[in-house]
Length: 351
Image 1: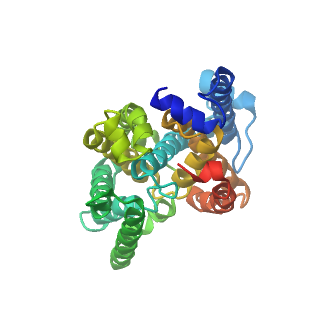
Image 2 (image 1 turned 45 degrees about the vertical axis):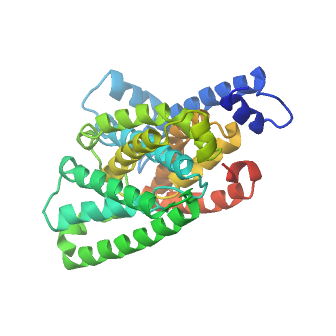
Image 3 (image 1 turned 90 degrees about the vertical axis):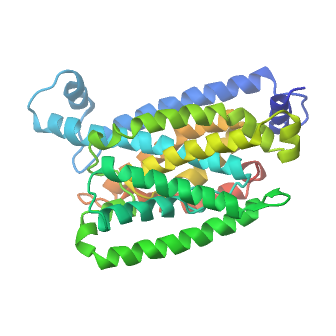
């Protein structure tokens, strides 16, 4: 029996390997998740301070005119939806990656301080160096994510191997320090950060596609790397010694995973600011649906995370219409109670 078969057998107790119908259900579920994402993208374009019919959305995309509603669709709502799509995919995969990498189901880029590192680096770029464009401070976001990730991995290493508990504690401590430093730096130059208040709260409002295009190649590379290491991460879930016995090169796997995590988390923060709970909650949901196979977890996370982000963004537009609540605040309200329910399920809370 192969390693993957053993993992799939764990997902279906009492069987030597996951039966074909079970695999088919997972594939059908993936198609269903994709369909739900498409529906939510359409709703994201339609719903706002003013509801826009589907016919107008269709004309705006395929039969453009000078109609004000079409203008709102093309120049505001469509870019916002696309930004939410890419940011959601990045956050979901980053959470799944970091949970698999350090073998801790409570890990995510926010808890481990990766968000704080990226946010602090962007704050330095904006407040100290005067960088105002995303294509400029995205490099600082990448650097902050990389430095904090390497620092947490180093602090969590022991003579007996990496310790998930120590990594969690190190991430919380590093995140707290950098979060305080970021707040202090923002207080020294409030004018420079006044225009970034929504960014600090985590928002996809008013983000043109010009912000996404420079970061898109990094997302593409990270996507390829994430799925390339999904198989070795399956072996790593059984422990470092067993992973080595399976022929997994742990050093290479960790390096590729860190590169992917840096591109995903750093890119998402550069675009939308620190958005919490998405990377923590979505892999739990995916694991609950498909079991411990990281290949399926990554695939489901890449579809469920943007769905959650778009739902939260739609709620943020509706609950205080005609005003809006940043999506980062909504994900916290939605994510906290749902996560409490999920972690109480044995299949969802274990790796």
